[in-house]
Image (cartoon, rainbow, N blue to C red):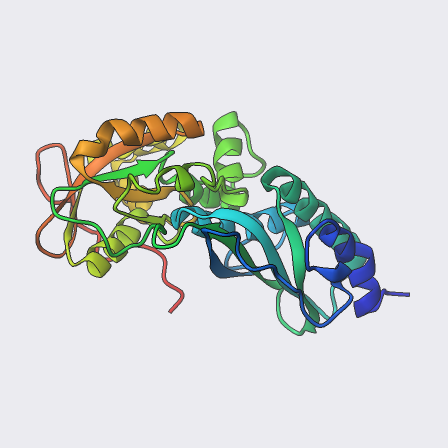
Length: 329
């Protein structure tokens, strides 16, 4: 006999709350969160993932769980916040085959990332749906008052930086949805992993507090997310294509088919940090990234004006970027 709602909670999710202050073992209607530590404020973010939109139907459930956590931790990192815990709302199809097996893998993924990032499940909800698997995570973090990194504080003259490499996830999705059969080389496996398992820069984000002037994470595409900084700060963003950091697998694909650079610039799900900082803070940015164990690359500048331009090595504007990135609507 299939497990009921509360049996599922007791079996798969209550163990994930153990040790979390105020979670109450998931036995009550809500959690009792302590007031943020003295000298800190709460940072709260929520992201929903839908099967067929944010992950593939045959993605392993443990990786689905870890992606759900990590995209939220990336939002916290973009605000300079240290992660604290999360809640989860999960809707599974009413006709799902072997739901307990799927839940077992899903809970295993949650547990692994809880251990990785030092967080706990604080509460949530579990329901059935006639549609695809849908889940929503709300994550909580803390940051010193008035120190959170914002999108709205970039200034003309600032440098534009990005962590890691860009375009991996977009190309990973291409690999996973192609009809070429199983993955055949390590480059394909690397790209697929980047799509399925983001790497939130949870150490770098807090390290940039007091150094960066504005920040966000690259979830909808480099160009589109740069546009959010431009719009909120009332500035123009100039990105130098030659400086955009690419992994080996992506660089090789673009070298073979140059038009694919548009996919790298507009593809989503990278979950790298895109941030600005005054020119005089260049050495501090590099030192903070090194201490956090991350790589960062200076890819452009902030100017007076509006909008986003990507410049080729000759200084000409790259055309074809009307679609700056992912949009749900």
